[in-house]
Amino acid sequence: MTRVTYTADGGHYRVGGVGFDPGDTKDVDGELADYLRDHEDFDVVEDAADEVGETSDLGDGAVEVEPPFDPSDQTVDELSERVEDIDDVDLLDALYHAEDTGKSRTTALETISSRYYDELEG
Image (cartoon, rainbow, N blue to C red):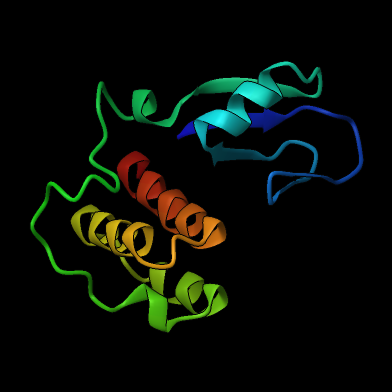
């Protein structure tokens, strides 16, 4: 994932299923980041993994931890509420991996990813 910032002065911008308001910084996949690099209203801040160190385990499934629940049984809104109460990065990694290998919903993955990086920065 790559972190990008929407630098425009006003207006909502939606691309690749991701909505941005002025000043928003979000993690996006490499293909969308490459597209946004050529857009003057976006700055590629950095690779999200680089922010927390050389590598990131998010979604690689290397940690053998069971997710606390099956994310595919939740709507994205329900998932967002439940993820806010999780502060263990290994559990968040397990949830990300379960979602990625299951329904692989972009907004669900972004929700889990955002919480993961909040905890690492915490």
